[in-house]
Image 1 (tube, protein in one colour):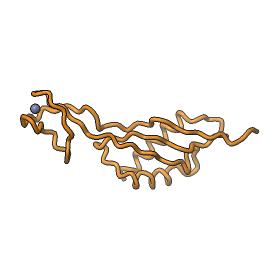
Image 2 (tube, protein in one colour):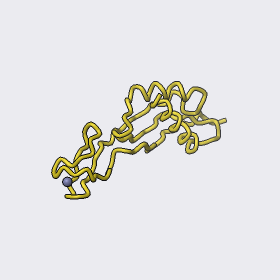
Image 3 (spheres, helix red, strand yellow):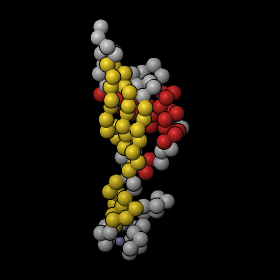
Image 4 (tube, protein in one colour):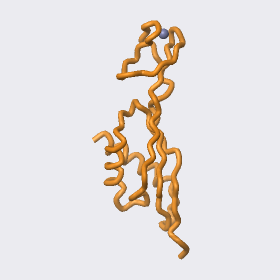
Amino acid sequence: MHEMSIARNLLEVIERYAPANGSARVKVVRLRIGELAGVVPESLRFCFEVASEGTVAHGAELVIETVPLIGRCRTCGVAFHVEGYVFICPHCGSPRVELISGDELDVVELEVEEEGCP
Ligand SMILES: [Zn+2]
């Protein structure tokens, strides 16, 4: 499943950045996900819940910001919102389109809660 592999990638990133002292839990994970990834937020939340079982991020809330898919025509320079994954300039019809945004899959911020003092 597409979302499951994304959830696993997220967990790898989170475990790299989360405090490794074992006393912290990740409460909130803020994400920026480009439209190009075609992620269904509800599906990603479900997969993340399953994949994070037994990790510091289990039970964390995913806050997902969707980044629109924006292309720019290399021929006439017009920037436009790409719909239906059609990379053709609506202004001049050129297929020479570069991607400006929309392929992000970034962890923006982790909110971590320390579980009291030892
Ligand atoms: Zn154009």
